[in-house]
Image (cartoon, rainbow, N blue to C red):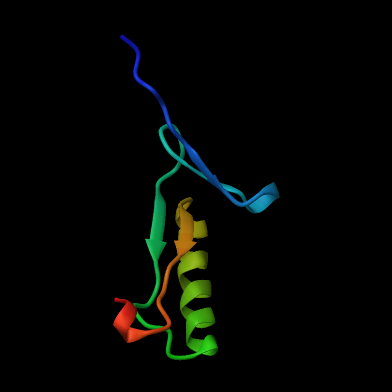
Length: 69
């Protein structure tokens, strides 16, 4: 019996990120609530840089409304 292998590719070109077996782990992270564009950009850039240094993929996730959590 063979098992199906599924992958998901996010984006296109050199910044595309593939999630699934045989690919580097991916971190999905971000603040629970975006308080400002500046805060979101600062958090996103810091986590992106840390993930790049560690060889991990990164998906930014956040909510703009506390009721959305």
